[in-house]
Image (cartoon, rainbow, N blue to C red; front, side, top):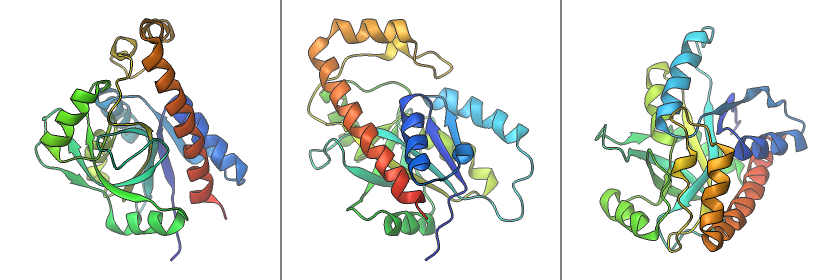
Length: 232
């Protein structure tokens, strides 16, 4: 089955750089990689502007992937695991109906990735989930496997375009350890601010070390996945 991925949406910062590095390794132009803000509010605002500024999407809508890191909500998913979201739930409860990713595109993604990839249900929240207790509550409330901050907003804002969308994530933190609370570092526009981020890490050094280790593992795996998806 031929695979065509026309656009790649990636949260800005380290995740964006990892995906670009993966594409560069296999000689693919990074122009198709679009950095987006962190969090549903920033994503919605960005996509509304992007759709207004974009020229016509053409008779055949482009196929798009959202790539990035995620948090595990289950003991079955560990740091470094690659997941493909089949369904995404609005964790802010603004919308009660889950949104599904494109089934044909998900099949293409599964076939393109050689290692075992796990199909999951994701829940998107408007804040960074940093405690194991919160993760357990999310898992029980939504029957979800992973948590992110952009998936539902991207799917809902691009619904009207009929664009086939898939979501590929790499787990960067497990379900049973607390992480530092970095919500104060996230601006309303979806930017991570350096000084509050540094202060948040310094206040909780052991959880911060765990976060850094998990993020580095996840980012390296994200780079590999990007290369695998786009290699000729």
